[in-house]
Length: 491
Image 1 (cartoon, rainbow, N blue to C red):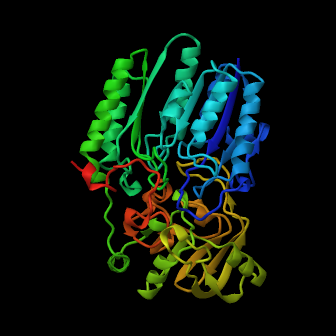
Image 2: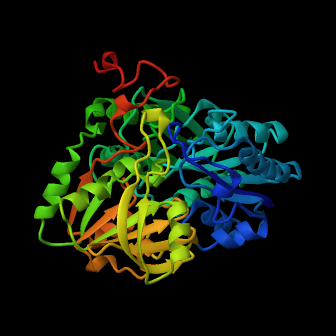
Image 3: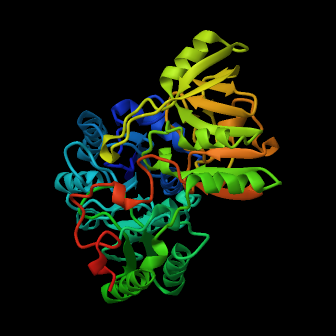
């Protein structure tokens, strides 16, 4: 047996000004061939699960590419072409099955359905090849994706700590089908709703209940059932909540499960709306908390949703209200990093930090914040997560500097990076458990690494292209009517 295993992931925020060239993928660009195999084997990812299953089956393993970038604007044409050409060239050489670790919300400069277009192309090259796909919980699933693969599974946790398990499920179903033990029947559908990402945490309602329904379906008789909250900041036709169910030959049963989950989601649609309090009130509340660490969540400028990771509104308010013993992770500012490295460790500097990137889609101009501090550390920004998310996958923040203002230690990075693991601080000599406040540019993934150390969590509504106020975004392509953009859907 010859198995092709590949990874292509990007969650595209069509409102984000952050570019997505080829070098955004991987640590220094995508991994190709044997490097892809080595980089992901033994990690908590679907690709690792696919590799383990292939090894168990004593299959010949081909890993043409592994390419993942943090969310940002549409993927550049040449980057998408390079990644997909590499996969398709491997398929042209022949295989018995294909295992794809995808995201499900990729938009490119040339199309709105990066995964669907890839799968459709693969089907033209090899019409009968069995294809297993894993998708992120925030996938905007399309009919094209479903029509051009054999099995789809999705993550059931947010933060995404079950990526390996999702891959193992998809791979196992496909291998069993190759052996004639099952005949997958797959059903997909959606509802016209754009849930707020901050209401998709799987440890709380409403998403917790939908995932429970999917798990119960699998416990009963479904081969796989997944709920996809969708990624709402992708202005494409199919953005929004959907469900995929796979059964053993029983199409009617799959349709019934799918319909029940989606009907339940629609009934709970108001629970998917996040209401934010004013920033000054949130920070004032945090100041009254006596036990730390207190996590300050700067969710409107989240790298893992396409934020610039350089808006300074929350940091500025923290300074204005005089919070002390604060660690900030992290501000993306390559210009500042370069300036600080030239100054050197131990030197006192004053710089204009952050605010380097304008956000024309929401009418905001970048506003740097002048800060003065001592340079405490300089590093290459690389670390390997020890927590439950992306365990074992090498991370690269680019060149990284710690600037100490006296009351605040700010981690400043060259490349955007989501603070989902304590390593973002520990790799540069900051111990977050000793801090009164830890300010994170995150939405929910911070819970993977930081929830165990947190005494309190305060969500801070700053500014950026990952905010929950849909009125600041100009949706043009998404299907209409859709809740909550259109009141007529709320009936």
